[in-house]
Amino acid sequence: MPRQTKNRRWNARVDIELPVAWQDERDGVVHVCTTTNLSASGLAIRSPKGLPIGAGVYLVVGHPSLGLSFEAVADVVRSWPTASSEFLIGLNFRSLPLELTAEIGRHVVSRLEQLERRRPSMS
Image (cartoon, rainbow, N blue to C red):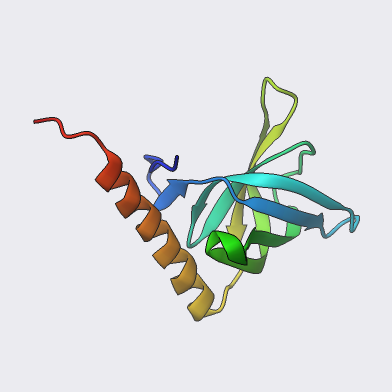
């Protein structure tokens, strides 16, 4: 179930699992993993392989059947190992077409609205 991640970022961000195939610009090897969160400016992935900060990757995210599917190039801005021998990797998109940025933003807002409707009332 998606939930909003609290942080100081400019764009709304929502926790969401989407399939991702990524290719490191340095070696061309394709890896498959999932997102942990998404915003119009970037995403985070949980991956079996780590990446150094500054590395560039080519991404294929989501699937049409999930309501969101896109390709992008991004740069690693955060990377750290987890206790389960995976890596959490924060990626910022390089320049995206305005239409794609808007589509991702709409998807994030829609998921946040769904979350808000599901939240139990505190009254």
